[in-house]
Every structure is written in C-alpha cells, then in structure tokens.
Length: 572
Image (cartoon, rainbow, N blue to C red; front, side, top):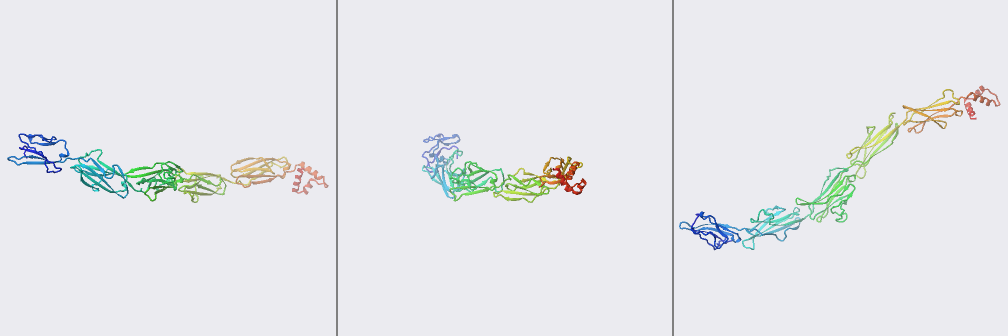
C-alpha cells in the first residue's frame, strides 16, 4: 500500500459486530486537496501527518452506535488497483446490575444438612457478554460447578448471563457466604467493592459429640490442685445447649430451661471442692461454630472419684449427647492416732496401735523406738466406704529389763506422696520396775531399855520410779529421812523407847508404781527390865502367899510368860 495515494477514504460500517451495511458517508481525498474533517460526523476527525501519508480516524465520545467495522480505502489510479484495510471496533459496556433470582442480597438461606440448594444469579446489559464467578467464603469456585447461559438483553447490542450454582449443603457450609460476582473487561479490576450479591447459608445440623479438655483419665490430682475443665461442642445449628452435671445434678442455676434443666450455666455458684465460673463462648474457627463451657475444680478428698459430665441438647437430637471424666485425687491422711499404754512394767509385753485417717493411695506407716527403726508385722489397709484407705499397724514389744532403761520414745510416722513432710505422732513410755524387798535394821547402841534411842534403818535396791519408804511403829507412821545413792534407797528414823513399846512391831514398807502392794519388813521391840522394875516385880510377887526370891522367879517363869507379865506390869 502506498503512503500517499490519489484517493483514500475511511468507511465505517453500521453493523453490530460484523455488519455489511456501510455507513452512508463516503469520503474522497484528492492528493492536492485532502479534507481533515468528516462532514456530518462532528465527533470524527483525522489525525496524523499527511505528508507521511498518515490518515488516522479519531472518534470522540464513543457510544454504542460507534460499534462496528471501519475500512481505510485507497482509490485506484491508472497504474494501481484500489486497496483497503479494515478494523473492527467493539464498544464495551460494563454490566450495571447483578441479582439473585428469588432471593435478596444479604439474605439467609435456611436448609437442612444433606439437602440440595440451588442459587441463581443474573448479570445483565453488557457488551461483550458478561461472565459470572461464584465464591464460597471468599474463595473462587471452579467454573465447572455452575452452569451459565448467555441471553440477549432487551437493549440492542447488549447481552446478559444467567448462572445457576447447585450444591448439597453440609454442616461445613453453615454460616458460609456464597457470592455471585459479575466478570467483564469493562469493570475496574481494582474496584474496592466488586459488583456482586451474596447469601449466607444456615445449614441445620446436630452438634458433634462433646469433648472435654483440661483433664485426662490418666491424670492424677493432688489435694489442693486446681484444674479448669472445658467442654467444647463443635457444630450444631440451631445453637446447642451445653451444661455440666456433677453427681447427677446440673450446674445450671439460671433456670434457662427450668430448674435442673440442661441450659448453659452462665452464673457463679459454690460447692465444697468446686468453684463455678466461666461464661459459655460461641466461637467461629475455620467456619465451624463451637460452644465452650468451663468449670474450675479444686481437688479435695470429696472430688476423688467424682464424675463430671458434659451434656449437650439440641432440637435436632433425639437424646442428649454426653461426655464425662472421672477425677482421681490423691490426698494425704489428715491425722495419725496412736493408742496404747504410757507406763509399762519391766518385762511386761505391751502393744501400741497406729491408725491413719483416710488417704488415697493408702499411706505407709513406719515405727521408730528411741530413734531406731522397729520391725513390725505388715500394716493392714481397708477402704473407708468413701473411696479412701485407712492404714493401721501394731507394735508389740516387751519392756526391757535393763536397769538403765527407764523411758522409751516411740514414733509412728505416716508417709504419703501428697505430704511434704511425714505426719508423725510420738508417745513416751515409762518403764517402771519394782524395788527389791526391803531390809530393816534396828540399832539400840547397847542394851535396849526404857528411854533408849532406837535407830531404825530401812534399805532397798532398785526400783523406778524411786520407791517410797515408810516406817511404822504399830499403826503410827514415823518421821523418816530418805536418801538415795545410785540404785539404793535408804530411810532412817529414831525412836525413844518407852515401856509401852515393848513387844511393839516396827514395820518398813517400800512401794512404787510397779508394786501392786507394798513390800514390807518387820521387827519386834524387846526391852530389857531395869533394876527398879525388877525390885517392884519382887515386891509384887512377894506379897503373895508364897515367898520366892528372884532366882526362884526366873526358875518358875519361862521367858515368854515373864515377858508377858512384865508387859502387864508396865501398863499398871
């Protein structure tokens, strides 16, 4: 094609896309005189450098009427045949509306899980024909999931598209937004708000089985530990009702479903070993809605073996769903009780008993005597009827005969993993011993006559506690002085002898806690007669019918009779 030809012209066609109907205008250019405007078409003009053969057509304010085929023609000359070139102009018209058929933009579509649902969307009045893109929760769906149908619009040269998305609702689609978006080259790609409409599915479905976290069946709590038990229920539309149950009693104190109902507990209460707290949380995680209800538990003996049940109710359930955990609490005994004697006699066999209060697991008992471990028979373990174990043990010993052992320190210790230190009880046992039989010594330092000082000494060996020594003359107790040296105890008393003391019994008694009855030693006072008394005796006897001398008296009277007679005389 020559750059400059004798004649040239642009011929716009008036067809829709490829119309053969040419515009009525025909432009002729003579080389010497070329017009740069298009008569009858004020929006059309030529551009370019004519000297270079540039004849460009510029259309200002393009409208739909400018859509069609344009030709640039160069007329023939004597030496050349006519030539031409064509260009097709497509005027793009962006769609101005998108609509969901039978539904409102932003509406909620309720459907049962497993049911089919069809969403229809129409994008209209665009050129070239518009397209449709479907989105699920902001993610583009594959084009093969929806069917599109191109339709002519009521306005000439414009097109519409109708798209149908068919899906089977699942619980994962609950609360998910489905959007229909218009696609067209004339729409701005970076538009802040694309041309689209949306609906949200509400898929009715039962909740999943509840899951309890915060405690596993293998966990062991120590008394005083605190745990938060959380029951989480995933899914469920309508929203499920979740409640904690403890020993068959609901924690629901709000009366949401009436007293003892299954409603969610949102208030705070109190119970031994349990602290109620926490608010049910309705959370969305990966498009799955869940309900969480938490309870804080403080481990005590009462919680050992306690069953916590999380129960879920829904209008779509025939019966509640439930999950439970059984707590295992290890707790130490509160006390150890030791029983048995505190005083034993040397050589006596005695028994001490040690019993713990309930514990889990059973406590271990050990014995120590004066700081040294003592072997005993295996302890006994029995259940107390409330899940705890009571441990008992007996210590059987014979009190030592060693004289130096007067006291035994016995300890019973309870050991338990929940105790920071052993729980110990101590008992002091006094070992008592009976003293030996006393020895009574009488010393008159010469002849024992009336007026003499009679010294009495009572001595004994051993005995714990130290023995008590008493001296008696007849039935009267004498004042004594007691001394103890080493293992011997000695008591002394001084007695001025009177005539009436002749034949009196002197008694020494020794006793302590080990003697059921006092140990005793006795002696009898025997006085010698003075010359005065013998003279009186001669006078008394000589006044009788017969006369005897003193030697005759000794001959006639035996010693026992004389003693009795003299005693009678001393009493005259």
